[in-house]
Amino acid sequence: MVNTPTSPKAKSKKTNKISRVVQKGRLYITATFNNTLASITDDAGGVLCWTSTGEAGFSGSRKATPYAATVTIENVLNKARQFGLSELSVFIKGPGPARDVVLRVLRAQHIKLLALIDTTPDPHNGTRPRKAKHNK
Image (cartoon, rainbow, N blue to C red; front, side, top):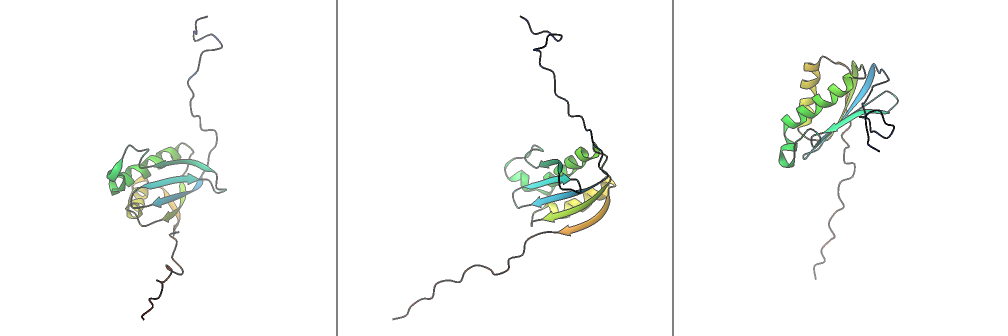
């Protein structure tokens, strides 16, 4: 039997059809020194779309550049536009190059910011002290 487009065994191409519309969402940015991760969720916390600098086509030390972060954030915002997203609360975590880039990209994309929150963890006790030397 030959697989023709009308036969039941023919594989059809899968298309991503967006079935829900989300007006408000949250943008989570994790900016490390080596990578930038971005994900967009709805208000309940369900992930709508995500991307990283590796998925944007960067590899090695080029992933740690501000340009790679710009491309990554633009990609995730373009994916989010398919859901009808127009208002975002932004949560930034980490010390990487994407921290400054996020604001520039959001301003250029004309997305309304509801909140801008830094969730970078603070060390609260530091490292353990060195063992005391015994002088004899």
